[in-house]
Amino acid sequence: MPRSVLPFLMFQGDAEAALEFYRATIPGAEVDRVERYGEGEQVPAGRFKSARLTLAGQEIMVLDSPPVHDFTFTPSFSFHVECADEDEVRTLAEALAQDGATMMPVGNYGFSRLFAWVSDHFGVSWQLNCA
Picture (cartoon, helix red, strand yellow):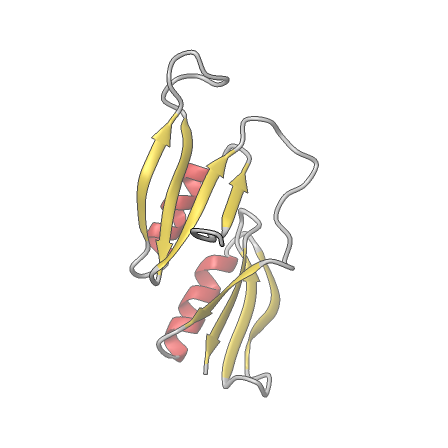
């Protein structure tokens, strides 16, 4: 039996900027266990390597991959956020979609009184719901 299961986000050079954006944008977001590359590793010492991000009690592992890959994030994986109220849905949707994309604008889609699905400028997808 696994000891734990964590969502894992791999960035390619902008993980630290993403974490700062999430900390500033999402209420209660916390970043801890930050690890930086040391001397003799594959990238310059001091560069961001990994961290743990906590959103609403959910821990997420974040890595900044030194090699550039032929893939990135896809909307088929997203964070589903149960927001406290309609204002939070609207505020987060606007902030997260800034320089990103909107797949489903803020609206009532029948399954929720207010819902939005956006992608931030790092490519991470967010479903924002007010049940």
